[in-house]
Amino acid sequence: MFEVITIGSATMDVFVECEDANIVSVSTKSKKAEFMSYPYGAKVEISDFASKVGGGGVNTAVNFANLGMKTSAIFKIGDDIYSQGIIKSFEGTNVDLSNKIQDPKDSTGFSIILVSFQGDRTVLAHRGANAHIKKSDINFDAIKNSKLLYIAPLNGESNRVLDDICYFAQDNDVYICFNAGSTSIKKGFNYLKKILETANIVVMNKEEASMATKIEVRPDTRDTKYSKELIHPDVKEMFEKLKVRDYQIIVITDGGNGAYAYNGKKYFYCPVFPSSVVSTLGAGDAFASTFCAALKRTNIDIGKSLMMASVNSAGVVSEFGATQGLLTFAEIDEKLSANPDYNYTVIEK
Image (cartoon, rainbow, N blue to C red):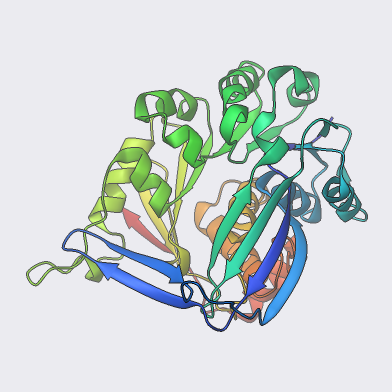
């Protein structure tokens, strides 16, 4: 029996940093967007380069195991040089790989991560085998005998198994943490709501939450300063729409602005834990999986769990690689003790 089973992607990530990358900001009256750009038609020199293993299924499994939980991972890879690197990367992690899926006819997922001078990133992703998980690939008995099923974003054809694993886990009283991905969100809210109804914890970033709910976060205007409010009213509206069961906890992350949670009675806000930013890849996976694990450790103390998640996420962004910089609970507690002024805020509904 496993405490946690994760299902999601596994990729070989190649990080590329270039000093000639530009951040271009475009604003309209209703929204603002930023783009990474390079000189068109030019040969651009790379200033830094590194290869690491990543993907939501891998990142979260490594983190859960690092936090002391007995963990197994479900992911699909090919039988190529990249799959060898992914399997080798698990050495010393205590993650059980008996539920991995390997298909020699498929290619292993591969990503090129373009890192900006600000530490943020744009990802060019080849899904490969990650997009081809079938119902027949999955060991449902392992899910049935686990306590927590963590569902990382499932892309392409793999998203078709989402209904089956969610309903199966719910029928067998397995706790579900659902990190929604763009494929399921793009199917529309009526479809997404059926999946949300099975989940105990739902985690999205603000952009995903906006896409799912069709609620745009309005910028400040000359007459209205939304930024003066700790939690934007549009984010509160997102929470209300995403929370479809009384027992659920909904989390919305907002990058450098921190993270918010809602349990139906109270809103929680937690700022980011201060750290240097090298790359933000894997930060969301570290945050979401740490939050799930911390809820158990703290007896469902949402605010404390947000803080623990933020500390672990800060460790990841301070290093290259989606699983580099991960901390144990003892190390997280140590950092929180050394920063007594760092705290969360509770807002009554």
